[in-house]
Length: 393
Image 1 (cartoon, rainbow, N blue to C red):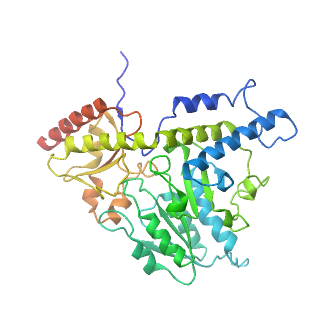
Image 2 (image 1 turned 180 degrees about the vertical axis):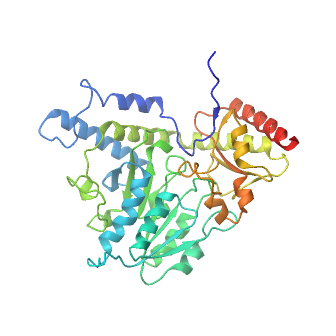
Image 3 (image 1 turned 90 degrees about the vertical axis):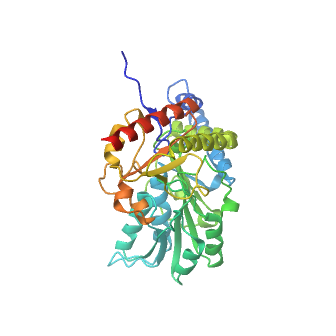
């Protein structure tokens, strides 16, 4: 008898590839498909590959309502974040060659993904001054915090759109107004919002924006960085050097099948955006309503300013690791997939003001396109049974 798999409630970590996406990708791998190097411009095989890459670029651009020439391919949001943050300071900084130092000031927050925190810390070690903003109790950064942190030498504000642990949405459009008035660039990590929230770059106000395909039913290992046209004249220095691909910003042979997969996923996400948002919010609310009356259970972060698929819950007084191990019928996490091996309490929840005990007692549950209502009912029953058993022990 085969073992019954747990219900997948970790879509914030990664999503399965859409079957339509997988089919499009498979057509770009073998001899009878579009397999060639898109940079091979001397024959039809290369022309066909380049054509598919540019169609995919257009699909990703359409997801953000931007010009296709503003999309730079990367290996994922981690690389996009590094390129945006390091590349801007490399491109715009006076580098003291003898000391290897950079200059200027960057504003970010304590609740960013490690893919932003670590590059910023790297810059800090090179001489860049950093202001680390703390979120309010609801879990988001307020525009006036950015306003107060601005300095004459501020070069970049880097803040995420949707927090990967809590799902709380930062007021990016309002923060962008503050940045624009001060003539400071804004980078947005949109790994958790692209394909899930309606993103119009003009309305959002970002100058740079990172996204990753595997968060919206595309393949892992591929992403993109939106770079405003005005910044493409040497303002962003490459962090990967080679053949000068992607208008000199990101060298490396383009992986046609990966890019086609991301483009197809972006096209589907745009088509289904309203339907997916409504379905996810209904499933998330169904789950919360089914367990919110349990003793010591409360929701972390804003219940209004939140992504439709996220639910971060504190099971006060319970050991989070024991709870996680006991929920054998569910695939959930205690926080970001990038830090789930750590025994430290979530730095995001700690920054929001939760005690170490409450942060340790919190779980992230995230629903997605393939979650069904009966999955949620099973999850509710399982959580109630496990919590009841642990409380009685």
